[in-house]
Length: 323
Image 1 (cartoon, helix red, strand yellow):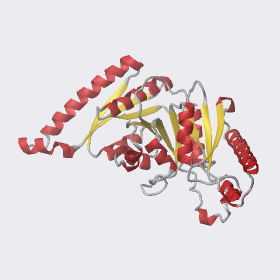
Image 2: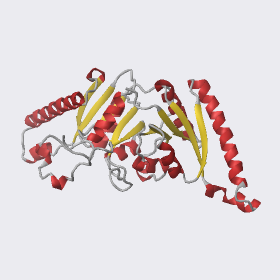
Image 3: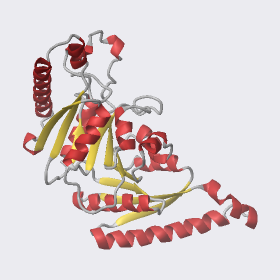
Image 4: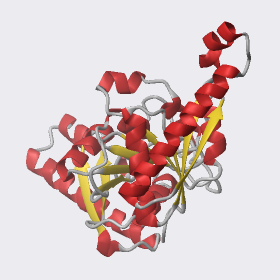
């Protein structure tokens, strides 16, 4: 099943913006999807010209005409390179608001942002960050120059409806090497066993048993979703979620990480420190963030469940609870 038929790419004509447009064009070619390219012109950036010419529109009209000409040249370029016909538009306003409005008519939003240092990634505040927190559509953040189609895709899961959505979206992508489903076990069990001076060989057996149980659980989850397990690889690692996911992506040489997010609130579900956001901020790979389906209720808070979580299996790789 084709996960998207309409793609929105935003560009500011920077290297990042050009990477986003080219990746969107390649995806549009592969999926037979419609492609729309948007440039947002900030009205407040035209203030000096307005004051010079004593005209409220001359600078906006001039910059708008220049931007439309540039977009047409981009459309001609990608038409030749990717055999895709794109529509283009220039909007005047605040970038986030314009993108949110345009995203309502798209199945996928593509934005560009090169990988940053860990500190820069965690501190960044901008249009990409706001779109990832608030957009109802899947958002692809392109961090690399486009060289080829995606081949290896890593999907970290936490056994919630959120990661189910990411998994279902990823399985709709025509990948040569399928998808790699991954879960990071960050269990308290091992620490408790070590504190109790349990012998190392028993701890190793416990880790092995826990990993085997988690692997079987992932396979059951994929089967329950009705997905094709023949194109799916499964892997488990012990350790903190973000570090484990990034290490696994590096180990697999993954082109893309597909992760889920909870909700749409600007203050909840995609907070600084959440696993999905930190993976996006710290990864040097392209990252696709898929929102939780709107008809699925948010998981209950931990205090409402009452169980001691480590005894069940493991602490999950994303904020979210067991099935």
